[in-house]
Length: 190
Image (cartoon, rainbow, N blue to C red; front, top):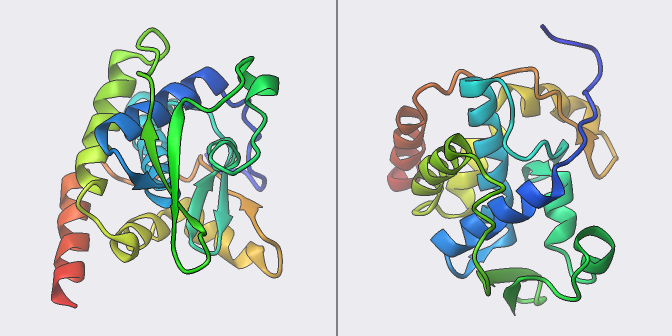
């Protein structure tokens, strides 16, 4: 069932942190873009398979694709870990690169809380990580921007920085490997 408005979810912050650390442990040195897209794709795939997302993060459409909102904020400089997690620092190390020092590469400094993520959460995260791991920025962008919910939200973006995505517009991704192969073929053809 499709609604006219995006449903506002209550992000499960501990699950978001655990999922992000799981991604960072699997892909040390990955950038914020790869982390965000992995979380988005895993949430969407888990929603399609099991009827619920992993993190319950609110997804938004931005210029470079769909973005899990709290995850995005958590990866930014100056995020208040004390307010949200009662801890002083992020559980990862960040290295800045890029011409404007605007690309952050993350390496987890601690393990994810395995009690927070279910077996299905971990299985879907691992499946999506294997798809995303070898992809470059453009291939990940192409993979995520074709999502029906993102395509529906895109025209509403206009001059705004972001607009909510309706996650009830499910993508038929019962076989993400097939979609991954198409993206790989496109990336390799260039």
